[in-house]
Length: 274
Length: 213
Image (tube, rainbow over all chains, first blue to last red):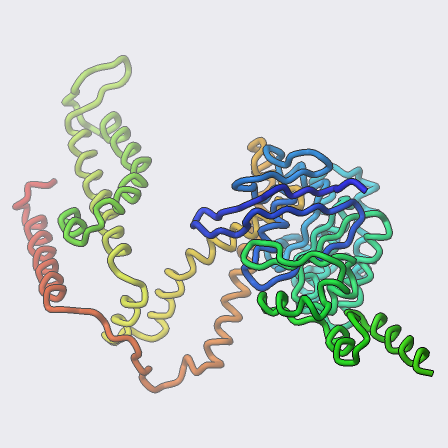
């Protein structure tokens, strides 16, 4: 499978001299679900902001379907790469929920009928269908966060970047975000998530990239990244494997980063023992 | 006096951006006064319909000096006085806690607003808002950029007020001072000297001794 996003030897230095990325190489095939994790300041957000042109590499290059993003306006890249920011209050401005969600689709020139369809589909996906005419500021934080997510889903971009989508969400909200990630992948869209929630990462993504000090230190499936051999590397960037992974190691059934994998491994051992 | 103070503080080079920032204002002052000073007849030279006057040029020079003196005074103050020192000293001298907080919050808010503005611009650009294209397109983006800025600032004020009250901001006892101020005899002497200079300069100006109209 050819890579949809290619990061070639990218380094990035902020104007204040902070070295945020150092020689990062990464290939993300179309339709993949990939999580980028690491401690604060490890370069996760800086990296994904290169994908839609908000940041440009100091050295190296980013290719989207073979197209070098250098010189391409963010407004143009926005129709290919949607980015849901961590803080919804940095983007909400409209007086009604549906107008907020329609903002992105209108900017990228979607037809009016399609905009309406996209808005209601996105609101349904995040569970805000009944709030279409509500003022966004009358929603609680977790719902404003879902609104911000809907405003990006409605743009129907082939690549969706989610920056800490589960922050502030209760279990129901996390489950909803997990379903959104799964549904996006089912429609062939590439989903890239940044998260500190290792359980969400293990449950929702097929590949995990771990960053530390602007470099990639681990890259593999959740079972590989959360396996016992990787724990020291995870600890070096202040991450802990999800609880099922730790239980699996304690129980001696191998790497089991999700509840389902843990239950399956324990069942197999029981069957084998009997 | 301002430039001498800046030189003695070793911040001469850092004053340059402040001086350059006055160029648009100074340019307009010079143009308007030199060419449009009301009632002036002492023409320097006639260039078609334009007739710059000596009176206008003199008035422009005076106004420019005032603008520069003001801008560079602000520059000297901001470059030599750490905000924390200013606030601590104000409080030590009996300025009300609320007034000190308002001054500190106003000064401290500037870099935060700049940072927040950057995040808002990034958020809207990521949703296809064109901030680099034609002027009418950029005008269309004013509301999406300004509204989150204002609403988040208001929200922050409310949250901060509650957080302050929760930490006994309005409690009656005088607050414990944790920060000793670096203030030696030279600084005190210079402050008194500057105060005397200001009083003498104002008196001379009011009495007409300086010959400034």
